[in-house]
Length: 109
Length: 119
Image (cartoon, rainbow over all chains, first blue to last red):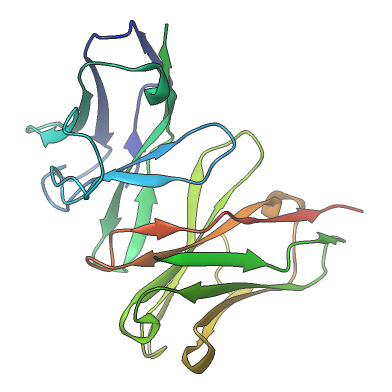
């Protein structure tokens, strides 16, 4: 299966943005979704795991959710430092393969 | 503090071989799945391979199956990726990542090592 994300989103500081992640086949609820942030020139870091869990140190402005058709990453109170690429990730339990979405470039302007 | 430090990236000719390494510290290396993920220049993330803590099980993306081999040396907390029959499309930064909260969650990532396949 594949995971599809919007190529880019933009929003103003202080506002809220939501990034979607849609699974090409099967239910998005079948396997948990993780979200990673990659700032320019840096390695990815995890911001959400198991659909909606926040690792320690990740601000509560970041939240994850899903409905019948897609998973979502919501960032509230946007800051300029949130400007980054965001990737969703899930997995195929049958062959233990990890699958990434194509990434979404978030611009905060 | 968890640290993952990749090394061994280089310029390699098409059809050549290369082994990259990842030195790990700050967590119980033997008890956790380890992964390789790559990122071609200007592109997104692509999972490459994973290995269980005991090295008894390995998993590969279809794009590298039969050409790449993942391994680990637990006594030295080091992960390896042997890459053979390299192609131009294998050009990428290769990251190692551990899985501390479940095999499907890539918890910490290294800084990556660049592999360039070109004549």
